[in-house]
Amino acid sequence: MRLACPSPGVFASALTLCCCLLASCASWLPESRADTTTFETFDDARQALESLVPMESTRQALENHGFDLSKHPNVTILTHADVVRLFVPSALLRREDLDPGIVACLEAANACRGMDIRLARVHKKRTGGFFADFFNFERHTQTTGWRFNAVVLFVNDKVVYRTWGGQPELKEQEDTRNPLGPFQDIGPAQANSAATAK
Image (tube, rainbow, N blue to C red; front, side, top):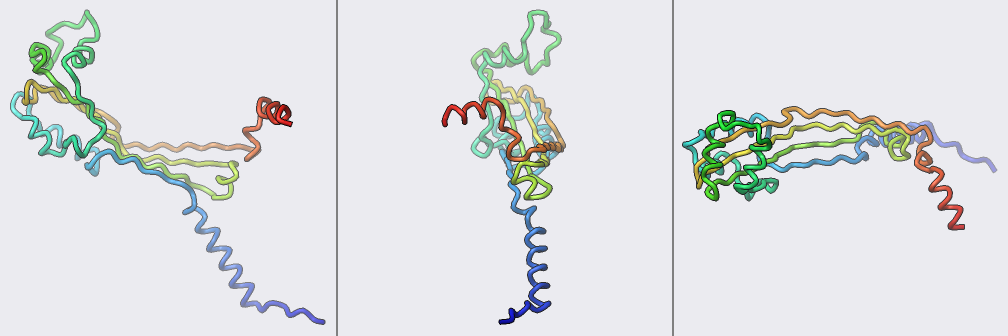
């Protein structure tokens, strides 16, 4: 009995399918996003904060410029005691070294409040070959995005001080290589545990 050989067309189709699967492997790698803000860019957040005028702007103006507490969960409310710890860390710091807005807040006692704002848009994506990543031989993780932090002080509902900082452009590449692949993490402790279990 003679076996029928597959036609060249079948080989071509199988080869095309394999190429497509391998090409799409990169899309199987995990990725994650951390968005804790409605601002699209670092500069958007910076400009919104800088639009506040110390000794003039109000808490409502802060919300109108995009810093709505209901949309930014990573905001810490600072008490007067928190402000003291934050801005007067040393007894050697003189009063004249402090911004007038900070002094006004410290003198206002319980009328002094603050907001510690931390915003971020961070995207982590694994790149490289799927099988090398899956079997733990090589893992390449690319992190992009930005982080923004700011402190705003109020006396009652008036903004008396604001400052900002952060990372305008976050770009990190982490490369991990394990010559033993999935067996890389097997050490003496794990080997002993396996032996004990037997």
